[in-house]
Length: 300
Image 1 (spheres, one colour):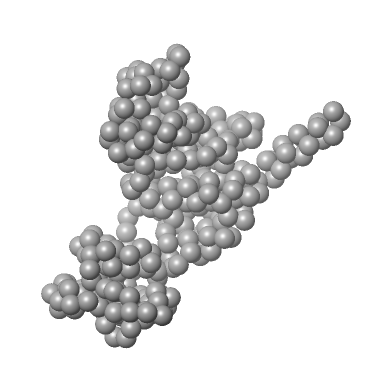
Image 2: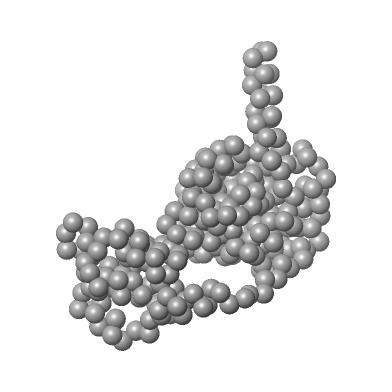
C-alpha cells in the first residue's frame, strides 16, 4: 500500500512527532503537503496493519511495528511530492466511439433528452466501481438470462442476490444494459463500445447522457469546493446527497475530480477539458418540469 498510495506511510512522520488526533494529523498534512488524501481511511488501514494504536482522548501513537516501518520504508517529503504535482502532464481526451458520439449529439440537439435524464439510485460493487461495472457489462455482451447474470455478479464480487437485484435498475437506467425479453439481458451498443475502448471517460459519457448533474458537477467544482456545496447544488437537479455522492465517486475514480482536502473536491485539469466536450444544461429545466407537474396536480 505504501508503494501505491501517496501520503500513507508518510503519516507515520507526524504521528511519531507527537501523539495526535486524526483532526490534528489532518491539519499537519494539509499544512505540509497542501492537500488532503483521505487521512481517516489511511489511519484506519494503519491501525488494521498494526502500525498505530489509540491511547485515549482519540490520540494515536506508533506501535513497535510502526516505528520499524518508519525506519525501513522509503518515505517522501512534502517537497518531493509537490514536485510530482507540479510536473506538467499531458492529458488526452480520446474521441468518442460512433454510437457514444451519436448519443452525445442527440443530447446536444434535443433539449427534451436533457429533461429526461434520470435521478435513479446508483450502485456498484466496491472498490474500483467503474472497472467492476465494466466486467458485468463484458459478461453481458451476449444475451444472458437473469439467473446466470445474478450468479455471475454474486460469485464475482461475493455479493448476495439482493445486491445484484438492487444494481439492475441502475444498469438499465444508465443505458448500459437492455432487457430484450422476459428476464433476458444484453449490453447496449454504447456499452459494448465502452468495453472495447476500456476508457473510463466513455463510461462517464454514457452516464452523463442518462443521469443528471454529471458533467455539470465537474464544471461546478472548477474551483475547490466542499462536498456540502456539491450536495446543495445537486438538490437543484433533483438528486439527494447519496446519489450525488455516487456520481462524485465515479468522477473521482475517472480522474475528473480530485479530493484536495478533507470533504473538499476540485475538478482536475483533465476534468475541465473533458466536461467542456459534453452538452451541459442548467438545473432550471428540471425545476420547470417539477413546476409543470405541480400545476397539473393543482388543476386535478
